[in-house]
Image (cartoon, rainbow, N blue to C red; front, side, top):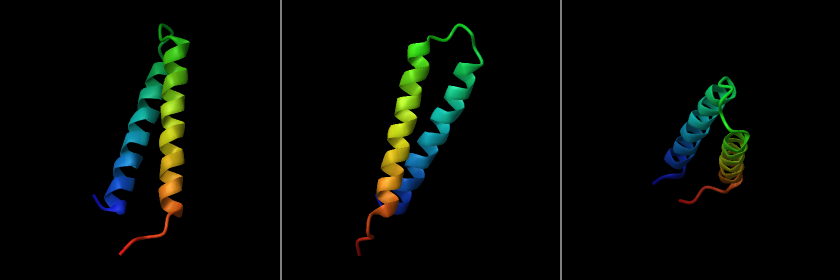
Length: 59
């Protein structure tokens, strides 16, 4: 998998979690722990994306 396609996949997952988080926050029955877990996953993906963007390209 190329770096560009890996970044695209991570960004897609980040967006999916962002949408899931928005939906979860609109439902009063959602457990606070679930929201915290989603936020952590989203942050971990963001950190990985930023790390890869800063990585030198390999040819």
